[in-house]
Length: 133
Image 1: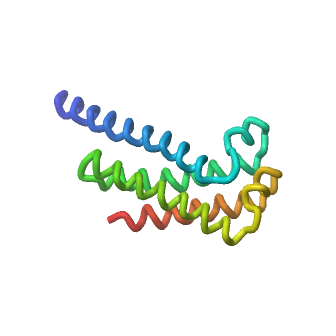
Image 2 (image 1 turned 30 degrees about the vertical axis):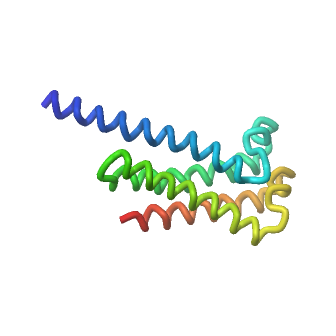
């Protein structure tokens, strides 16, 4: 029983550590890919930036959690995490095409632009998670 617990703890630490690393990588890649500085805006109390980034984080975490539960290995989980990052960046670029001056509007505090981006990110994350088989 103890050895099963230790093995489970080792797996937990491996997957959880991988997930934390992927979240950090997600923040780096996503914030470089966007035309606005989310963290600077959040520090300035721009709610629209927090809303858009927060929902995109959930949109990333959903397929990441799916990858953890379905992965055959930590490497498998990592690869699907990279796919989830790519999907979220793609969603940002697609929404940017549909919403003129998206980043400027988020930086200006426009909640409608931020909410649409966040909802699109969340929807893509749900679909991405479901598509991982």
